[in-house]
Image (cartoon, rainbow, N blue to C red):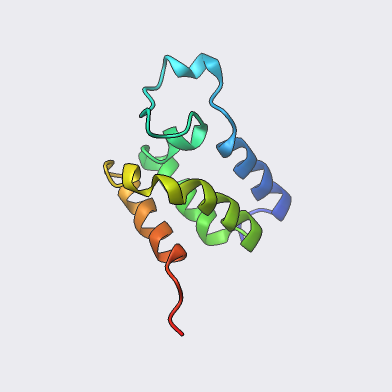
Length: 99
């Protein structure tokens, strides 16, 4: 496992936090995406990798928290080269399991 539970909580909290105002002009954020660090990371080659690893290594409550933020923006993620990878992973995780 990568890092402790507390480490992953801190990373997830930072990713889901509101984008600091000093970065608003530096990064163009799709108006359909939340104004958070997550919006930058899902469109970035390396940020995308971090989000995917978090989804794989997070505990159930942490994963659920990420999925709650990513699920509603799947259609927007599919517009971006790197966002497509996260969208596919999120759709797979949110799909009902066969019974």
